[in-house]
Image (cartoon, rainbow, N blue to C red; front, side, top):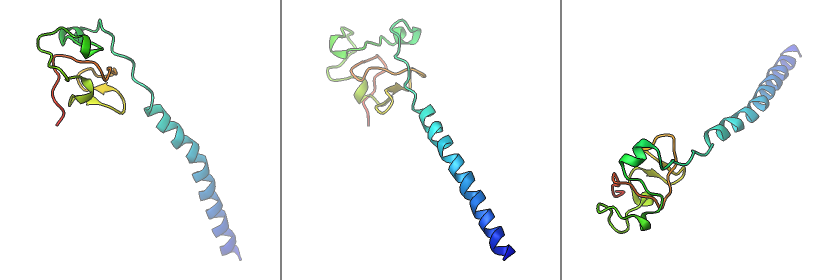
Length: 103
């Protein structure tokens, strides 16, 4: 009988630990989902790469029609992040001089 009692106690302790951990896992996922701040146009790197938020209004001679952040290899659509501007999101309709066609 004591063996059954110890098994039940062990089972209940595992259930309680697992139940306590579930909310903590949910909070960890939310922390990573925080949106990135928008890239400021006065950012030194944005200026040096001639970043614009709307590629259709760009007058840069290096800009090719149809090139924009959404079809650049450095752009991550799920977060709006750009590998060139760490910690910031960029407009999918934007463009900069480092644009490279997505493979």
